[in-house]
Image (tube, rainbow, N blue to C red):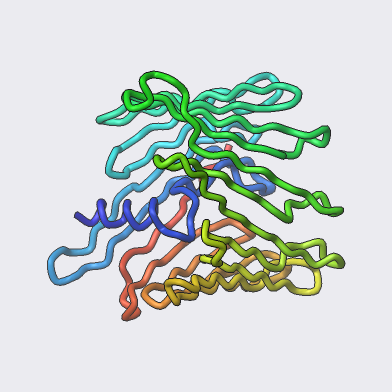
Length: 291
């Protein structure tokens, strides 16, 4: 039960894109060969304290991720393959219930990713300008309900400013009625710092559903990020504390939880998760093994 709760909180947290903590080895004077996540669940009225090996990341000498072994509900193993230009070309995923493959292809004007599963295939194509920036992204799906034909999931158009940063996104999503819903995102930047200071995400009806504001110190390091959800009337803050120019702590607070991360020499070494009453739910320690 604990593993399921932990899995759901990590995979479906609105603050996280995915559960994978490391996509490349953290840069350091020493080459990192492996990172092991150890998660300890606090004792409660029903269960005693328990520690599990939550994930193992194995890296190549160039820092690229080679293997990710999870201890989540599906107990999956991810194997990463790269081409001669060090570009990701395949991710082979094996789990106790499902095996699937993610493949990537590269062209001068676009790149394509495809996920092949048992019941459905998903394909995403990103179109690039002459600077290598994504200017359009299209996603499709194919399965029994689409009669084996590729059907459109979404189309997103990106616009860039003079800083070569995305200042606007427009996503189009077809629905069963034949109507196309439009979702807009607007990003604002500080010209002097050349940093993003605000992002506003709009629903199809034009109402903002998420507003993110960023605050930096004098050298452009992120100090604080505030995420507001106007419709849900919720706010989440993320604060960063630095020592000797390197990240030392990151504290994320919401109305019903709190997360603390501790760094050493810029590397994540421990994270803690608390409930709305300040009770520790679990903490994760990160063990580094070097070449």
